[in-house]
Length: 314
Length: 300
Image 1 (tube, rainbow over the protein chains, first blue to last red):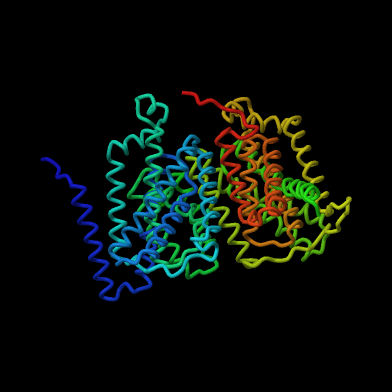
Image 2 (cartoon, rainbow over the protein chains, first blue to last red):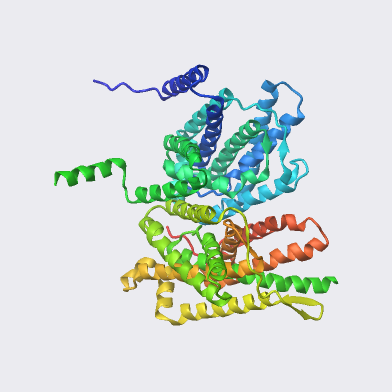
């Protein structure tokens, strides 16, 4: 008998609509209050950040330590646009988001062209440098109101908008990864020289991946700006880039689904640990170290369970 | 003060700051040379060193020399323990995993110190603050002490690396760890030594930093750590003289932009870090292996 194949497009649409309806019902029933739905919005923004970085780090295999810089560009670009345009939300918000995203993508290309000549740790360091420079520039510009930050940004990032933008982002990235472009990107990760030899322009695809990632980070930034309604450059520092990188590495390199799960798990854990207040970061860092060691030693829940049952049997 | 004097004054300040960066950068470079790991926890070792010396002086009432030695011992133990617990299990894992562990260790040390001592900055005792006047230049004692100590340490490290058996073993491991192991060198031992020496130098760097800017706080290691790391990359990561050169270059650039350029362009202080990063980017683009680094051609 032939196996029934799932159509990924239909499965995805059903899953997205199903979870959306589930969330809305929970909200109307009061199971999810405003506080939790706010957390969900920020988790969704982190999911966009993580899947966009996954394209560069997970699929292209390059270490990027300046992703928060692109988020900052998108955030400021979108916020300044919506604050200056006097148009209804459904016109100015998409314009703002697209503007922020495009701006981030352009900066991504400008940074990517020189930076992508380097690889490995050096690329990581150079992206770190660019990320910090972006933050310092935002800190000193008049239009961004410097270190005091931008306030009074309209609050547009509702749950519905953020949810559907996240879903669209995931869908687009999934499509890209499973296209000719995506295969070229993965080929570069697996063996750059061989890829070059079969006639794929590694430079073009690297820059493209970098620009796409920057674009979606910019979109995430725009959502972030219209969710928090206040922007300060210091919230896009090196630590923010690191947090996103942690999600991507934990989710599994080159695994979009794993990245999404890791983003949700880590952000939720962050919120749950909030009750430990000052011990939160200790717990978080310990979990991080233990998870990585377990991953390296191939310790999983199943292998632990097998070990325990074996001991009991003997 | 005329511009000439100001310039020379800032050169002296830059050498002082640079000597601290160089000491810290040596730890990054030694560890990277052997295990190819960007040890993000190195900045936190600086902080641990500064806190240890503070406790020694304030709680046990010892003088700065004893406190410095205590800091060196504590940090060496920290460095070796961190390597054994957190990095060794990941030695054969993908590089990015070890990087995340290093970040985890760094978070752990920061937050632990934060819980114990609080988030706020603690004033550090002022030491060697007497100023020596040379013409119209002002040189504080700490500058001379830092520079002399740093140069002495670098010289002895250079001798250690070049002349002793362990030093040779370290150089061999950094060139090719597998071949070194086949020649009977215990790579584990050399890695531990690299972490120990690196952490000891970071402890001294941390104490000198705390004396120069007399306050300590849990996040004090982040920026010097990052800058020292840039210094190591600038000079050519994995190359020991490169770390020293990079440290001094960085210190000079920083104090010249903050102290000298700001005389003409008042906003220079705000842009100082951006200038540092720009220098790093330009150097990496022109010579990706750093100023003193060797170009390694990729083999197919």
